[in-house]
Length: 229
Ligand SMILES: Cc1cc2nc3c(=O)[nH]c(=O)nc-3n(C[C@H](O)[C@H](O)[C@H](O)COP(=O)(O)OP(=O)(O)OC[C@H]3O[C@@H](n4cnc5c(N)ncnc54)[C@H](O)[C@@H]3O)c2cc1C
Image 1 (cartoon, rainbow, N blue to C red):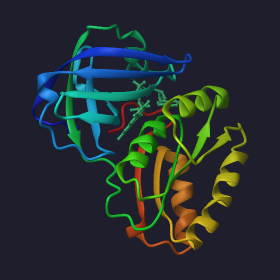
Image 2 (image 1 turned 120 degrees about the horizontal axis):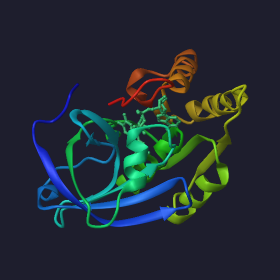
Image 3 (image 1 turned 180 degrees about the horizontal axis):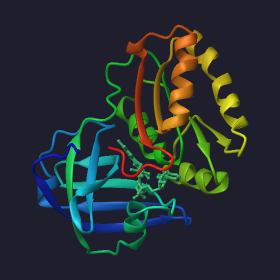
Image 4 (image 1 turned 120 degrees about the vertical axis):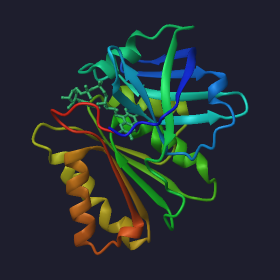
């Protein structure tokens, strides 16, 4: 397990529930000041009982002067990370590690297409704010479309296309149909979210002849696996 050596102490400064499935959490702490943060980087929270069992999240903002960062957590309800975020209360203290490199979109040429799911909304938000000159669009597979639409509206994220998840995964075919026109326009790709979906999309991009310098990938979770980092 790769974890940073130095743990930082933080306090839950604000909680904002967006429907029942998403929670915006603001953490503050002197250890969060003077940090060189690149949008797309990850941080990790140790889970109760073990400093080695960590769960990984993406700050959507990091104010290094104030020592404050914000996470958008998707509360899928199937693991300790999701339960931990659900149970946070204002003023609660916690530890975190990072930031550490995850997605770094700075070198990707052209417009950016972020593919992912509920766990990628925060990443899409922060990449869209990183460079106002860059056109960023999001393509997300989503279980509860209404909840996701609310988060996207609250955060003011533009250029988002949602694909309702289907048992037979037919929505993945629709997502793959988006790729060729984007490729033809010289777009670069950020593939995140569910590992199996990323694998499919990566193969499709390879078939379309997209070079690896136009693709950044990071699996955020995988069916049956715990705590990817
Ligand atoms: C670099 C990186 C950045 C990330 N950024 C964010 C972020 O900003 N916001 C965010 O909400 N998540 C983010 N994630 C995803 C998050 O870390 C995972 O969803 C993680 O598994 C949650 O931990 P858990 O303890 O709730 O579930 P785990 O104990 O890890 O998994 C338990 C079970 O839940 C399933 N599961 C895990 N995640 C999901 C899911 N999203 N949907 C459905 N089933 C799931 C697993 O398959 C497993 O069977 C990120 C992950 C990585 C690697």
